Length: 83
Length: 410
Image 1 (cartoon, each protein chain N blue to C red):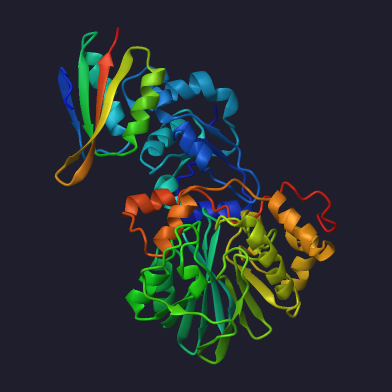
Image 2: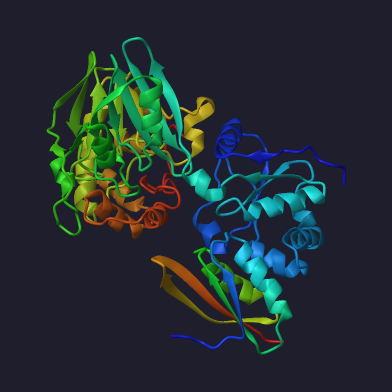
């Protein structure tokens, strides 16, 4: 499955909290309705993005996927700026 | 607020010292709520803590940068819950996120500190303590404090037997190196359910033989035989170590193949039978009612041993059981006076004791079925999966909530 997105954030190799901290900055630069695709190697990011989307007023977690890239698990988060 | 003293950063070892000394401090745990629910820092008594996931502080603080946002959140929303006069330990999964929290706490004038390596480092921390160390016999207790797991090394004349080695092997390697010991034998008192045994790996690495009772080389639910090589333990079997002998006593109950090991009338390694405050649960093989009866018989057999023997159990439920010395041991006579389950055993009939066991079963942990598979060589987890399986404190003991009339309770 491959979803549409407007901007890609490569957060591979970054540990908690940086994938989420960087995604939050990037989403601030998007227009409402646009989608940010975040690619991370930190397994904890899966639950963290879910929790973050619940408290953030202008963020919707559209989808999450796990892919295998170069033999390692990669966690992909699609986050939409809502307002 | 007045500038608080700089606590620096605490390692897992520093944390253990403070918990054992009963130092007062406060925990700000910034993991997810379900991670926090599943596994928290526990001391000899409860450590006061508040859990706010870091992404909530980051978002609700409203600033771009992590430290700015957390400081803003803490100042606005958490001031009345944070103690001004105690060290505040920031805790996260791996220790990186909590470092930002420490900086925010410091900026606001709190005695903020960080648990280096986070819960992962705490969960993987081991401490080794000598129970006895003389020229002809040494017994070491290797403690994994976060999980409540205990293992033991018996050494004499440069030879050593390791009992119930835990998953990480460095404590045994380090001890063997520093005390110039050759590990000759590795014994698992039973097929463990709560943690992954280091036994087969330690035996393979050192060239030692690996021993297990054959009844525990069959997975009790799958009814499949273990795939790893082992030498079957017989009831009464003698394992020489230097100038001493360890003798196996078959005491089925917690598992069908559980053995205790004794050194003369001095030391009794009880595995998962008698702990310091409680007893092992009989239901982890899925046959609670049948095994409870066996358990009672085996425990009565242990109570018949000389009362001066020092009991060295396979688990603890609270760090407090180690007392001020951090050594989880007590004489059999002492335990007859104060162990909740042994008090019941001594006053109840066999039927009454079975009833007590069955009424005191904690929740069954589904992961334990897989851990038993791993220990029988039926499943080979990755390091990450192994760590996940082992998350949290062991639940091998009976729940103590049902003890209502223990005569010797303090």
